[in-house]
Image (cartoon, rainbow, N blue to C red; front, side, top):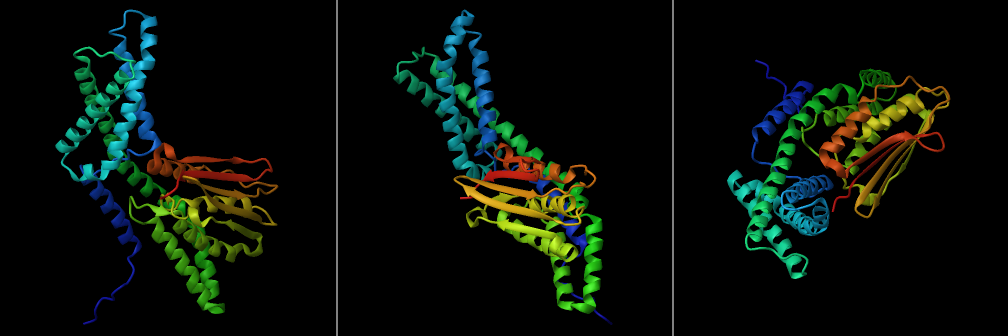
Length: 357
């Protein structure tokens, strides 16, 4: 009786099943959430929530509009340092918080909010800018605890909402990241090379398999810029078999930028757009420039391509929109994505993300 072969690599359907199972597992992990409290987005949302609440509360105790306006700077002097100190504490302890029960998490963030609010009030009183009454320290502490709990809940809900959004985006984008005609062209190229250069044909198929494996990777897996560059170079190697000298790629890579975190398959769709719209329509081909640079605590990525005299038919922008949305889901307001025609007529996509380490 013949035995079933032991395949070393999973099939396409097995990879897709792993994606769906990962989505279900993430949906089931309701409390194991590491809150993203260290970015620009949480900071802005926390400041807006706390300041707007404090300013509205002052309307109830000030006798006139002029008195209310005069009280705003002093209130901000209490609220802003309290928010910044609370975020610093919460950011430092967020991984410990994720391991605690929900009740302990609520108590910890509320106590931290009460402490930071009381500390800020005490500092302004020490400076002589505020003379609190007997009950005001208690009111400030309770308000700090309530505001901390509110900010905590907002970020917790945002994190929970992000997981099904990522699952939907990943599954919807599978067919847009590597277009069907690219698959067919690659397979035809490999078939043509089988007789002429079997070793090169094998390399082409290995590159193609790696691209599809990345497309069907883990649901919430983050990758690095260095890994993205390596994967994209596999894609370029396949395309250069089709275009030959018509496709020229200039890599200007900063090794210090390689550790930056990106969603999987961030660069490949952008390079594919550059090939499709900047190289393929032109008889002379085109030039694509890929540049990475670390500048202090930021990593800058730019992909620039020449534009043919007779441009190709405009696309639907799905690839650009997908990359932009996935960057926002990973880095919130710390990610910047821009695209458009630059001064010399070329098309450029620019990305800015936080540096790692």
